[in-house]
Length: 288
Image (tube, rainbow, N blue to C red; front, side):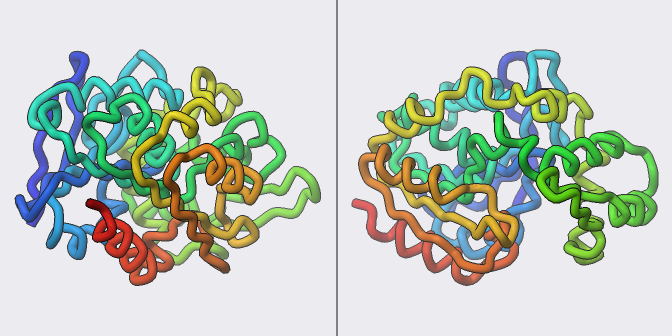
């Protein structure tokens, strides 16, 4: 159903999975450290209604690495440049679906390119949870641990076993959680595959708390004028969008539909696939 092709942007190659021309274009942007295949649980259903373009960012998957940096704003600049090129430059009805980092990129694109983007879906954007607050969460130990395995040449089964022993530490309590106790074997293998294709420098701005430099959440959200679906996971279950940030986003975005999913972690499209598809499809069909 999907074919992979390369887009040349700013002298670099971006790998992209392209679906059949079933309708208007839908750009899908994954979370940091992952690759386009993270969306496979939902692409079959969405491909019946849209022509899907699912990208690997620079430093991820089969795309080139870059020395320009891996801050959120760097990804935004690359995707802005991409949308100025065919076949996207002439479009007036682009839909963008972003998860995590992808949702932060999608939000910025909506404000920058109001004439091209018709609507956006933001799945659990982390905002400052991965900025200045990251050292107050287990995420700092998680990403520091993952960096050890980025670009690894170990066989995937070996790498997955190593990942299962990674410990996430809550800095407030010192409590540790073993990754293998909260993720199943298939999820660990997928993470291992993603890490094997990842530039270790992706982690540098995250660990240094520089990931959000140049990205002003309030300015970005306040610039969004198109219809927006904001999907919030449950923080105690592993979600990253806090209630305070979700409330502020709902205040700043001109036309927002905010849905909070209880007992659901950050990967909503994996954990609550059917519910997510219902929300997305109903939202999209409400558009003019």
